[in-house]
Length: 166
Image (cartoon, rainbow, N blue to C red; front, top):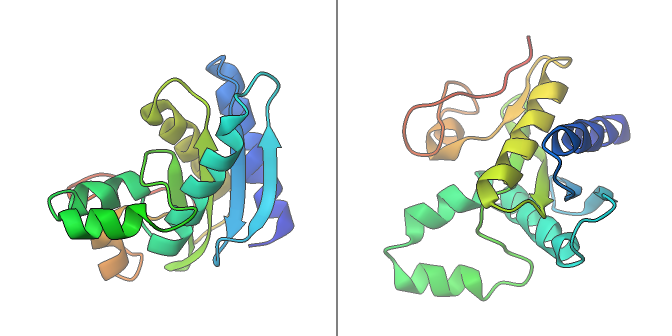
């Protein structure tokens, strides 16, 4: 993922969080989960730094939103235990993989809002802002999207949308 794209993601996430009056930490990682960019907004909780990093890493490593992955394995106690024991793996809302031409190119992690849903909303807004300017860029949405090579709409394990270049 180019540095310019990382910066645009952070700027768009901070703009959305500011509009929501929520101080958060935003982390961008590359396809391997290595830190590319981070911003801790004034007032964001200190714990949000590591949480955002773990959400981004999990999204890049798994290729789907970590909270959706957790929902898929929740009934399998052994799988939950296995993933919970892995360092830096947060299976909660707020992490989204970024696809470029159907492949994971990186991920965003957002933490610090009052709910995981708000963290995720901020991450989705950032990817949508980036995607509006770059064809072929979008957010990974569940197994269906990955099984289809990044094509088609798959939000979680049901119906939904995918951020696409316009």
